[in-house]
Image (cartoon, rainbow, N blue to C red; front, side, top):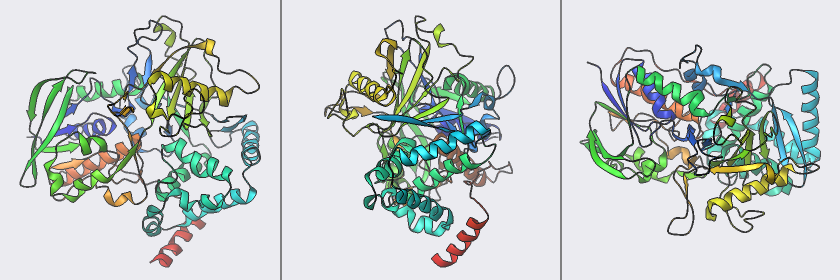
Length: 544
């Protein structure tokens, strides 16, 4: 008789764990709070009363798949599509990156290793412009290059012993460098790429993810920046759910787990309420038992939303309460005329709210948004807001995003976009704007007068590695953890990190049950060889 596994949470981690387990013959039940799976990766349908906006796609944040991702693409390649092929075939390559700046022209870089004379010229022009137009002193540029070499040459012991316990700001030496260096290199890149503050983020995490992105760009033929060819649910989540349910995974939607019960160091069951969605109004209580349990919910849920008595006796669970998270949420703008800013992502490098954006319709070739709403929308500009605690610059001057109403957030973001794009010509115009849709996770206001974020993002601050658990808990033999706070090679709050964590949880289950099934593959981050490998070996001796 197959072991029954109960998974709490139906996001990327929960879906990955269900996928790997059901393929290995386990009975799987998934409890998901929402009416749809996918968690923070899902796209969200706009339920606006305005005809022009109704049923258009919105997002928690746009999706992109860097070249160093290995786990998510592997899973995608095992999700079949009805018309043949797999979900992996729904990934498409972007080719450009626009670095937009308020008060100055933007600069464009290839989003891949140059594949033509034109792209080689573009790369050189970008490097020259980034170093000169941004007025970063040559000495600071050299210093930054030396930092990267230092990271590449450091052994693993030093990374965890030193860099993990130092902020990226301190490690980068930003305090002693130019203001431009701090704005564009030390702080701007980390806030924009991973929703983290340079003064808080672990130098190990920030530095090595930055290296992965740069190494992708330096590898000929690498698919550096991939995006989906349709809204996330259409291109990925819905086919995945269809596959999992077809294999026998029992999904219980609109089920909120409120307690993980235990006795003598073992989990004995879960309890909670069925709820309406999206109101989350409790309807009737439920209880469920299984042989094995996986907690695949984000850290803020483990901290605040589920009663876990085991926290008092299991240090790995108790330490979860010390982990930190920040806000990174999406807003989309619906346009009458599509405005493809660049064939890829735009980084608004000095925007007050650390914005990044992508024009979606150019990649959604088979998905016609004009068939939704009242037909007036022809383009979607999807924006991520990474900084919610800094005062706005325009319509919300002096007021951070988390203290703004939804209308105020939309107005300020739109103003910041225009300030960076509308220089010598008008790229974004008010007349072209049909409407907008802010991630409904932003609930305003709470009783203290500020917004509440129902789904924030884990941030790996300096020294946080010691507070993060492995997927398996020796003290609780039938409880496993699968979320982006689990210790992984990826080491970042991403879909990739969640997928890797779920694989580790499944492998721990296979070990615990003495299963002969093949273990899930887990990949390390790419390391440059040659002289850097020799340098790391020498540094290991020096550090020891």
